[in-house]
Length: 320
Image (cartoon, rainbow, N blue to C red):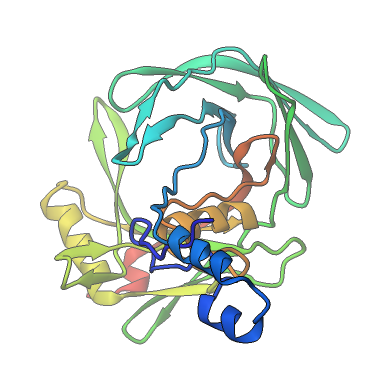
């Protein structure tokens, strides 16, 4: 038995065998042979490795979005790695064959594999469907069949739209969402942009800059909004005016409008984000490399969001 107290990455020291306390055992259970106690004491000097045996599994990532031109399912395989270099995969296998479908109510949508171009110029195979238009309150079931693996399933319900509102208040602009909807989300993600237009190639093109929420003195950078359970967020007039000035001086475009978007998030998208970027999950334990999944016979996320936007004249919200 191994029970040494050791640090696993940045996790606080944990007792790997908390049920074993040698001193209490000797005091309360005098019938334990001294020889056995000695063996237990010697065993606690053994080293401990947190690396478990590797088992390949299919990773699924898909977030249904009614505002998207098409819906996407991305498939990966898990990979083995050394403890000294956990981000470097060992013999990761690319998923090239799969049958993917999503059903909702009485409709069935088959996803077709296609190649997309990533930001670095490389191409990757994903599965897409152009006919599926997610609707609020509808439960969708994902089924994925990859040769050599059990059928993968997952289920999510699209939350109601946010019905975002922009309201001028002392010192800034408040963006809020309606909380009491038919299918309330688990969280919201608010974003605001200052928007202007310019002519390029004879056509009018929209240019925008996102408004930060605050400046982090310690990190020396501007911070933007994160998903939250709060139903509103306030953007200061100073931050809005600063963004307007950048749009004019750097992009050469006068800001004429304010666009605010509130994304309704289901529980799976929000929990995944918070476990990776923060911590606000009432039932899970935070780890250095956390896993959260609603995917059966695999790992990953099958979730849903519903965005809603509002526009207003910049001059009506900010008086310069």
